Length: 243
Ligand SMILES: NC(=O)c1ccc[n+]([C@@H]2O[C@H](COP(=O)([O-])OP(=O)(O)OC[C@H]3O[C@@H](n4cnc5c(N)ncnc54)[C@H](O)[C@@H]3O)[C@@H](O)[C@H]2O)c1
Image (spheres, rainbow, N blue to C red):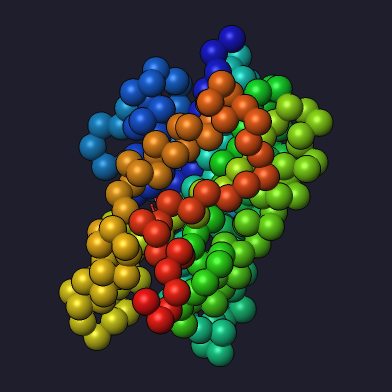
């Protein structure tokens, strides 16, 4: 029985880098996304909305038909609404919380039958779980909740030998970051400021996050690590505001 990797939001950005890296390591990868990947994908693309349990159930049926077990579920898909608490509509709030947070419950319930002792779940949180910026309230709430949910899942799934961890990226150069920068009067200046806020004076790359996911999924390297969050942010959260 082959062990596959399920990656949500696999068509772009960080998800695509994660899916590609696991393919390079010769894992069958099921990449779930709303949109098809551009160009030739190395992974098996399956179209689904991660916030819809019926669409996820169909993916479960496909995994079952291939007689695969699942070594890891990487919950990466997310959306961001660039609005503060006073401007966010109820519909926007519900969408962000559904795609970013509820989907983790749904993928866990949908794919649990395929997880074995030694399998793991990796949830993409964010530096915004710890400290944040104005104008993205729903997104920030979802990421804080993902960090807490990761701990709850680790406690509950530990008895099955399933580990659950979170990755908290800082700024990574993807479409989501560019969209966030675009809300500034000068996106170029905002990008420079973001870069220089890191002690390493650079943005993260999708591959930085993919490498960390690969480590966390490996039962030999990370077999005693669960319920933790790993900041991969170039040291941004290590810095006092006065620095
Ligand atoms: N880029 C950053 O700076 C940054 C920083 C911290 C955390 N993160 C987190 O990393 C993860 C990946 O971010 P990214 O920058 O690669 O984002 P991105 O917007 O570039 O890619 C997200 C992918 O998720 C897919 N997606 C969105 N809604 C979906 C749904 N309902 N069902 C299925 N797929 C859906 C999109 O189609 C897209 O392919 C997210 O969880 C994000 O919050 C990113």
